[in-house]
Image (cartoon, rainbow, N blue to C red; front, side, top):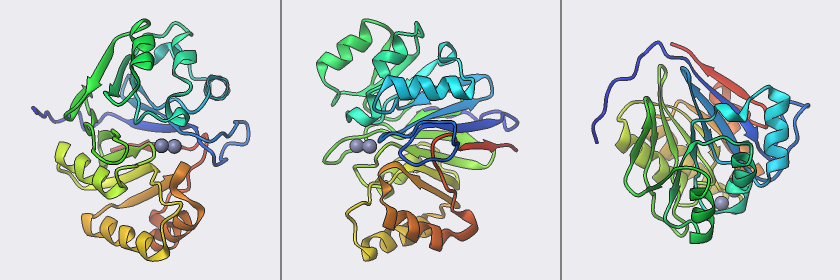
Length: 246
Ligand SMILES: [Zn+2]
Ligand SMILES: [Zn+2]
């Protein structure tokens, strides 16, 4: 894939719109995940949570106009990650939607009836500085969002069903830069302490600077990441906003 150097002065903002953990008390929590990424003037939504009421309600509380969303990347075919999609499209917004062939034909067709759909296989450039990892194989295939930020590579995961370390490897294959941040669900709810610690070791080996586990990571794993990462652990919940400036 052709890569270009993004403008190093572009500010990148990530706002968690939907999560099962609270952060901004004005917002509703719900089991699921969604995050908005502003890359300069471009606006991308990653996942849409489980339901449109919570998604659109939280956007309204945060003063986000859904009509400004230009790109929608859906991580995997689980209701808690795509459930708000049709409600979002019903607002009249026409983002280009990036999803995988593992999404049901019925869902793909209903999205296609409303807007442009891109079926992702290999890693794909969505817009300047914004990439899909491509389909990462696993029991349940998934794509992550890779952001080329002034601070380094940022990866956002939905549930990381193929394994969060595999997701990071896929992201590094897209942009070979230091990994500044991994944010999202790490899916370690049933992992043992030893398994979680081994994943933390792999994070360190890869050189992941900051970890922001949320959604389906699991309480125990979040606690272990918090202790291991110290000041570089970022607590995430719905409404958490991260501004990455040069
Ligand atoms: Zn899932
Ligand atoms: Zn999930």
